[in-house]
Picture 1: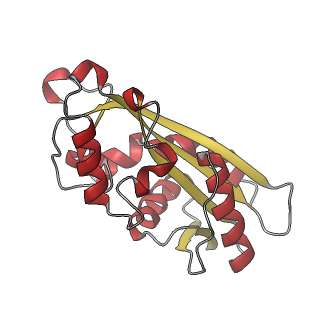
Picture 2: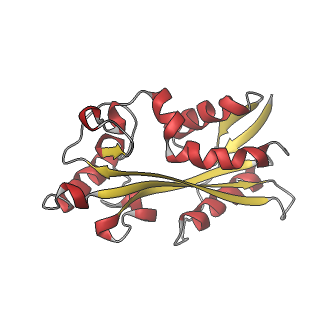
Length: 200
């Protein structure tokens, strides 16, 4: 089985990526990155994804994937965006991030709570500067007034994706892992990445 390293120390992301990858490339094993974290000083998802993928490829010698993703709230001008993981401070406290975002939107009415999950995935093949690619997936929806559901992670419990029946709308925190993996911003980005993985 061919290994490809995912530039993250987050086991949830590794599991999610493995499930998505297995749909089309069951011969690829996604392994977690065990090296030092590079400084993510990019100002876009694409810049940060490339920084992480380059570091992982150089450290491991394996083809590397890196995802930089976040939630972009329209009424906040696209914030938290690249700062999603640190919205409440550098502790990367997911619960605090979610609570702060809900508090900031507490007086915003439902029609104006639109948001998108954005995932940018970079693929870097070590030793070949020409083999760097970036793809993006966008998952539109809006933010609920309160968190619900125990599934997923990060902002999932407050994100209500578009396209659901009005009387059966759920946050991603209430979705199964299979449902999320089939529709998420990461799966949308990954579908664009599949042709590039076929060349590995």
